[in-house]
Amino acid sequence: MSNANDNTALTQAIAKFYDAIRDKNAAAFEPLLTSDVSYGHSSGRMENKAQFIANVLDPKTKWQSIYGANQSNYFSGDTAISRHAMAGENTRDGKPGTSNMPVMMVWQKQGGTWKLLARQAFKL
Image 1: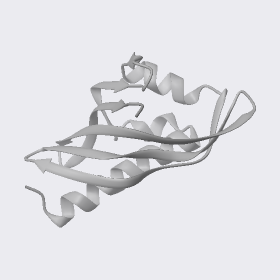
Image 2 (image 1 turned 60 degrees about the horizontal axis):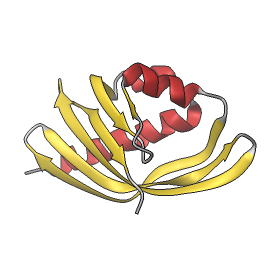
Image 3 (image 1 turned 45 degrees about the vertical axis):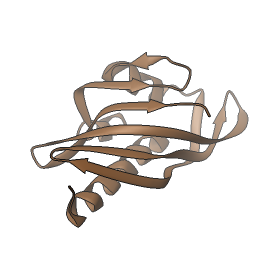
Image 4 (image 1 turned 30 degrees about the vertical axis):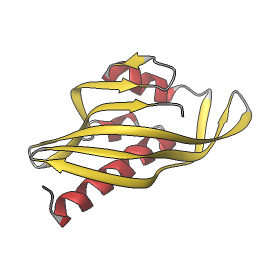
């Protein structure tokens, strides 16, 4: 069961997460990720925290915009699940592209702060 404060805080954490990807801000991930985060790509590739951050910092991909669209959050104690579409515009290897990929994120409240525990993107 959630309350409005949890929903607001989780929505803000997800927005900060996508802002950190867009801005390639490695330091911004520290308060947003658990130490043992499991990050799954739609290709099936899995990354740990260090691998995920290194991938975000790779200059091959630049996000002009990235956000969680059509977001639905579900809560069970100190665990939350967010389902949404990772949407936005990017440039990869100099070629423009867009994203509208379904994502499920599992967040855990640690010390009063929502942190990403697991993420899985998938193709429809």
